[in-house]
Image (tube, rainbow, N blue to C red; front, side):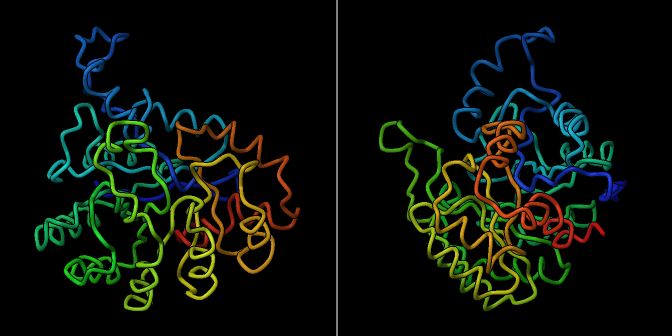
Length: 298
């Protein structure tokens, strides 16, 4: 069964475009007779990618209770860095999104280094209902504008799905020896300007305030009509004045509510957003309207 939206946009309070899937429903957990695998594996995932203790169905219930829809993604089990016990794989995520299509919007991850196999897998996942693809250049160690990855983007553009790229500093590996081997240079948003030129009909979301490249990200979003910015991973009270200024003016139709749940919860983000200096007429655009238009939710 392919995912089909049952989302009532008019009834929603907001659309969160940046939600981690948490842990697999098949992963042992202490409250379900677990055997300690979660301690060794899933908490390691939590440290590295901010995933929490919710299964996708539990995340759906959390968002449903709050009247919020959530863009949520699974991981590629064939990725070169896929040794994540307890992670929610793409197929499990798509199945959960079908069960909860009133609140969950399925994105997936495909390792771009898989070449033609990545293209075939992307086609399969799109047929199953994937509405977008998430990439993490610092973790996956790639420059998004490397032409070796363009066949994958060509397939995504043909199906008019959305690409979401991590940008800026990452918490993955932070504070560990050598930063866990993560090279932050890959978080620069500037390569996405090339991608936007070469794939003008492919929607692109630059995830997070792109510290320390915030001005570069703002420049790209102003210049390229299909490039958006999600505001996840930071509390709104820490947004730079420049980011808020652009959100209130030139980019008011290009900014998207995102939390990085559960690293930052919707309750925390929305509470701080209410106190941040955003214009009243801009708030509904950021919280829901921009994402509904981008994702074709009506």
